Image 1 (cartoon, chains in turn orange, blue, green):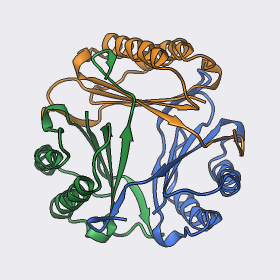
Image 2 (cartoon, one colour; image 1 turned 60 degrees about the vertical axis):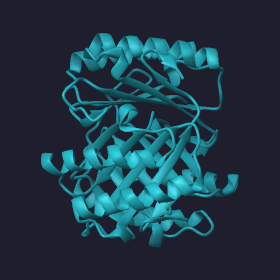
Image 3 (cartoon, helix red, strand yellow; image 1 turned 120 degrees about the horizontal axis):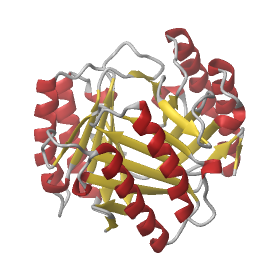
Length: 114
Length: 114
Length: 114
């Protein structure tokens, strides 16, 4: 039950979107027990965003929401990989990418909570 | 102070939107102490989303944010009801609907925190 | 590492957007240790939103995500200021503005978690 939201001021082409969702599907395995089989992704391109007061550069804010908890090491590995994917696919400088996590304890699917 | 965000790849007509906000207004009462009187809803239709690597089916990601805490039973009842609403109004298969909760401890309204 | 998201049913002009990001850049200093130097902002105007079952008035939902924790007093001061900014710039009545906080413990930047 992971969810990855990509919010960026860069316009995302369908081709890039597909490349990212495929790479996220592999990257999520860095969190033990998680796989593309339960991964939902959302992409919001062309958003109005600012970083350090500046909106003229490419910027991205990635939110990773997972059911349960994981380890510092797993999150570190995932941040490194997601940053790499966003940087390569959307040409966002790595120092303009935030990857933020939320460990979720109440999560429903198919009408029931896990 | 609940907030329900509906994010989906389905286009949402104004008619469907109104039906959902009305049904959410009644559903939120499944959480003791909550009512439509404090409910804010947001609808994002036509989004770019993928589930299990696939973007060709109808998908929905619902986030419920509430001030304070509630019980497992209340959240279970709400997940069941929200899933029913989304499934019926947007024709999303129940096994492609996530309902995720956030219990919030700092929440402001009208210039002050509760 | 703060992030402020502004979601509203009001259309946001570029001029208003710039005014808000500048004012948010100063407001964030109400949280000790935070400054515009690490602030990311996102603006979503013209959204489909309802409050108390009604979508005919101006409404805003502000999410403030910060790395680490702060004090009740700091959050209260920031809610007051953000509410003032949104009310003045977007003409949203203060009693139709929610400001919600998330204290985040896992947050990455430039490929590494803090």
